[in-house]
Length: 123
Image (cartoon, rainbow, N blue to C red):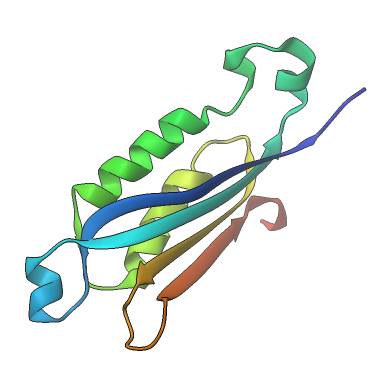
């Protein structure tokens, strides 16, 4: 049996970074919540049961954490695009989607989020 479309979901990765344009946002780190969906051909991994044949989500997550926590961003769009670049960089990735929430960005709302995606199969 061949299983081709594997989906990795990194759910609710809670990080802190400098994000925004207001003085207090520039001076103080804020919470962000990162969700990532990655589709890749998982046939090698399901057939072999070997780590070298799977997409290493731990390494992807570590790269995302380093990017988010070690940098400053004015816009949610830029932050989301940078995380998407990490999520989609491996050649096995067919599709990646990133949603980043900025909790309490607006009064009376739980959060504001932005979603970007990359479909390599359509290229």
